[in-house]
Length: 446
Ligand code: ADP
Image 1: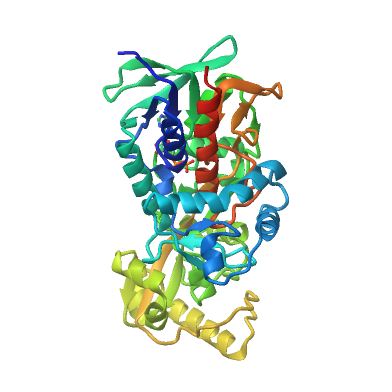
Image 2 (image 1 turned 60 degrees about the horizontal axis):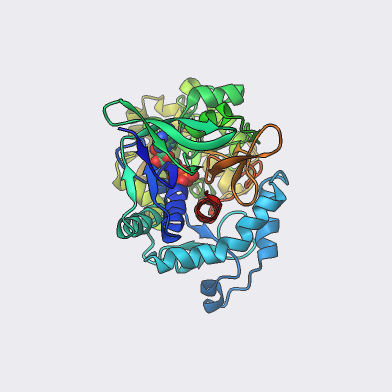
């Protein structure tokens, strides 16, 4: 059955739900369509926090930080490829966005230092939990209070246009039956395309065979649908790789583990790289090994000190063994080779010189068991590129003009992060631009 509404939003992740809250608060009738059986998308998987500068929380904690430093750090991390106006918009609205999530019941009141940031500015839940589920929970609760309709198991398939303006969508209901939703504005918030291997390989032929840390709905539908109505793309080949993910599930093992002392060995029991080279180089080196996999080797000494590692062990990702000989047996490799590799590495740590691979940060000799091995392969993590928008989230066409009635926000958009996304900026991006999309669409709809 065909429907009619003021604003239709495609995708119920952090961006789509933020847009819906703003549009509904402005008094508009909103329908969200979500193709998965649950809301949250990749947002649910966001583990870190939310970056913002000059926040009340930083001030209360006595942290000095400025929007200017936040901007400069992000630009540097993005290899100067970020769209300056979009980045400035994110930076200027980040503190308000953190307050907004907290007013909705979030608890992002702990600020710490994280990779790529000059000052402590990543806002995380006080109880130490991951940021994504908190954001999804508070936005879901607000949408329920606002009585916004979220149609689950409903996939948008096409943006309908009339005289060049977006006037609704075509969708498939839970039984696969097509129907239309007529609307005065359409907001695309479908997330990235990290789970669409064909699309990834199409834009980046060098990334064949990668698994992904993404949820399975991250298939780039919004990009395809918007392109069909004339939308332009930006930075589309900029894809972030995470070197150490579980080959089966794409579950991510933090990069901090290598910094804290873990080493990488291949299926033959040999080291093959300085473990602390950049993400892209370590990923490429893992892919050159047998079956494109490696093992992160850690021990009990590390587990006792490292909450992340303790969590992976608890969740069952690690192969455990009392001795190196046992570990070799468990992993099906030659025990003599593994013992020799580990002895050579221990010598390198003690002498402070890794003659084989020139690793300079040498902390743990890993001489004592029990041992833990995590099987890893590089995975697609974040797609920085996507639809081209302006600072008020209008989708820009290949003719350089905004497409009337069409807005986009979140990972589906390109330009904010340039060539590399800094940890903690994804959540900020989706909330800031989601809010703008909802507000502007509500103001401009006719
Ligand atoms: P963001 O971080 O940008 O909000 P997410 O990945 O968190 O992105 O959320 C995007 C949501 O959009 C996901 O829940 C995904 O299942 C949904 N989605 C993707 N494509 C479609 C589509 N064609 N129709 C409906 N929902 C979609």
